[in-house]
Image 1 (spheres, rainbow, N blue to C red):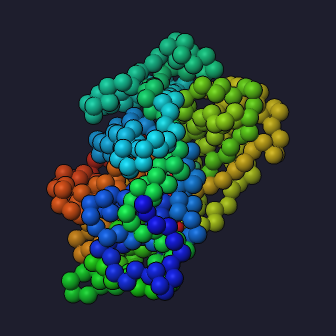
Image 2: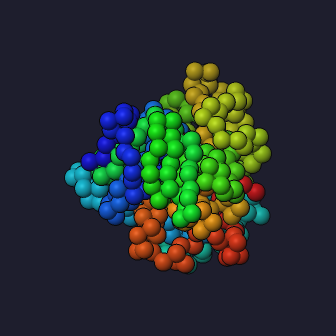
Image 3: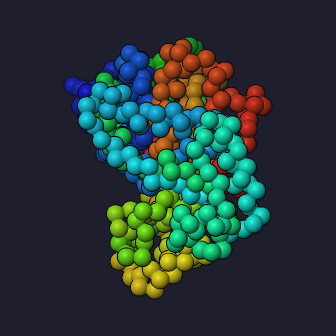
Length: 403
Ligand SMILES: Cc1cc2nc3c(=O)[nH]c(=O)nc-3n(C[C@H](O)[C@H](O)[C@H](O)COP(=O)(O)OP(=O)(O)OC[C@H]3O[C@@H](n4cnc5c(N)ncnc54)[C@H](O)[C@@H]3O)c2cc1C
């Protein structure tokens, strides 16, 4: 059973085999797997609660419909962990609210139809055999609320949503690690052999291994260890629209790939969002503003393919729209950085996510497998050294919002 505590002088851990910086989905999953591998593990989270920064902002959706091999592999491995979550964490009957509500990537732009068709072909190559390509007539037969202008889509019923909050808490409950909240990492010390300690606002922990899972702040934590990481955090807003009779509650996550806007039903209402490629806020922040016109801009983008939103708009009041924001963190190939960084001996990365809630479970396991020698570093396509090695396959997933 993991311990979550605000440390005191009596409970302060003076040493650890490994320290994880950051208590979001990625860091918590990493701590679970490291402790499971037999390493004494301490996670440090600067905020008062675990999972309260970016991970609290996700719309808790997951998919296997990726076209990059490394992303698809991580997504499938994470789904397998989620599907066996109670057994893996040793929490009998533990429910993570997994539901196969589907993902529909759809367009009314005939020029995008070939890339949707090609995506299904790539899914097949990567072992995802149950995604489908739909033409206009098939789209309308399955999803009558989609506009007649839709010409092409990919759909997978076994994509869906889950309670990422439950997953995070389950990893905590199932882990024999210490989770220290209200504890900010302020420095990383090194000696001739590499990293030797983590400094915090409450004291120092002697350790030879640190995992940087600091989400949007991972670049800052990297600098503490003397490295520049190729990370760009970008604000991503979303809105929750309160329950309205026009919103079909059996709909999948619907993504207009031409307009980079999406929605999915949630408890009678819906989450709506637009992944703005030009969002100007690109600095890590715990206090992200939201724009009053974000929901209106997003609805403008949703109406062409799902016209019922126009009717919803007509009756929409200020109190029906709840805005919030988090950050996606981009890398040069829009895929995360996972594994050791040889230039800073002892430093491991697990950062650079724009879909970290759905990928965190397997990404955490990969860090533990790399640290304990279970995984050969060359089998890890997401190793941070891939850019220097020149073995990068460009990201081309829909909805990453990064052109
Ligand atoms: C609107 C929106 C919708 C999204 N929808 C989805 C989705 O449906 N599915 C999906 O998979 N992903 C989604 N995402 C992305 C997902 O939320 C993130 O990729 C994921 O939460 C990243 O997790 P993380 O643990 O890396 O980061 P975080 O949750 O940000 O955790 C990092 C932690 O590190 C801590 N920290 C930072 N610096 C320090 C320090 N110096 N000392 C101690 N602690 C520190 C922070 O306080 C924070 O708690 C969405 C994001 C947004 C914004």
